[in-house]
Length: 280
Image 1 (cartoon, rainbow, N blue to C red):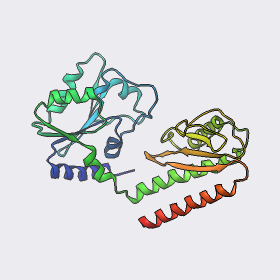
Image 2 (image 1 turned 45 degrees about the vertical axis):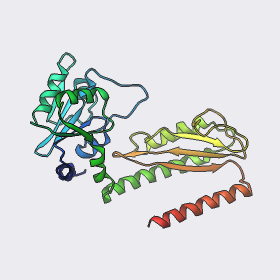
Image 3 (image 1 turned 90 degrees about the vertical axis):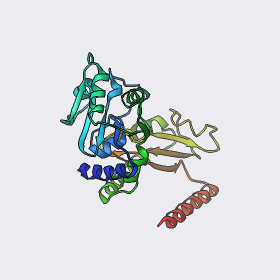
Image 4 (image 1 turned 60 degrees about the horizontal axis):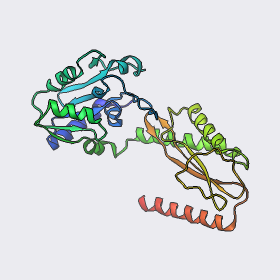
């Protein structure tokens, strides 16, 4: 779909500009997905940690293809599209550090290595052990320079993700009635997103009613409370299309809105229009 090699060539130019010899990105990194197309696991609340999970990631060097180091469990059970041919697999009984350091040291002298800000501390400790004299810098500051400007193809995917959630609310809004449980709406939204092609939710879906009849805190994002007349119901959810996310927020009033509510609504819409006009 994307020209990952072209993306890496741009990255390597930035590496040369900043004197970076090597980059390590963990398997769960969105940047690794962006640069290689490797599929990320959908995040779960439970902490998934395989044996030798700390090795999971890839080294990127201007003169070589990306080299992945992955635990056997990821290779065999967590890679639905297969793994790159340039992959070192670390089995449960292997010496993980020996395999990891062999790949890392194959790049020769490394004076400066860039590492994702979201790299596990165990990985960092072992990278420092492999490269005790190397300066460690934040890889995200480099990759972000590539990612902040979207291509037409990327914008099209983000637009698709936005249209998807728009369609979801259109399918669900008829159920925003007094007596409907917030949890039922949340479950229906997640089902609709998956049914329409979203890989998962881009963040935890929230449906909550707010207003004079409710003293709940805005951080209480999910209950099984029934909706009541005279309240606004806020929706906050997003979809994922080919790795690109949408973030969607809407409010629907239960019943007939008061004049004050309509006044505030119009103020918000006017402010939004002014903001859009200001950035164009």
